[in-house]
Length: 178
Image (tube, rainbow, N blue to C red):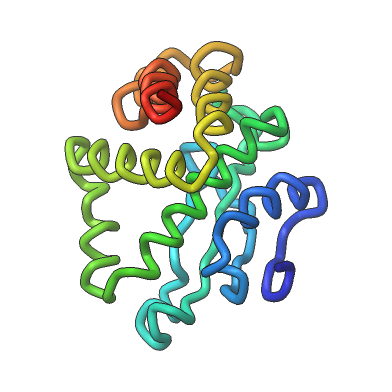
């Protein structure tokens, strides 16, 4: 599972725990990079692989926030189970991208230009994460960000709007268990 993966040592266990439910990504190249971004991390296919490789052979990058002073949630501070949920969410993006043509991936990426489309897309990815068996981990991630992290009120408001909230995740999980 570790072939073609460039994962920082401190995230290996949580990342590979999440990856274990994504067998289709076993041979995908996944690289972590530090970046100055406005969220904890984000994930996308590399530009070169999007245009020059088949969708089954794309390479991906997970960009991790490297800004210490922006009052966001730093990956290093996230508890293990919540981190597994976050990685499960990002890997769900990769699994989704693998099913899409170049045009389909670009359409997904352009959905970020509209908050309504972004909300629909991210909640769909949260649902895929739950389907992959990481519902409680996603619950822990959402709960941590909204209730225990040092994130700003604005950042928490953004997370509430765009992603499933802990209560919504719990309702989905309890409905599945019945």
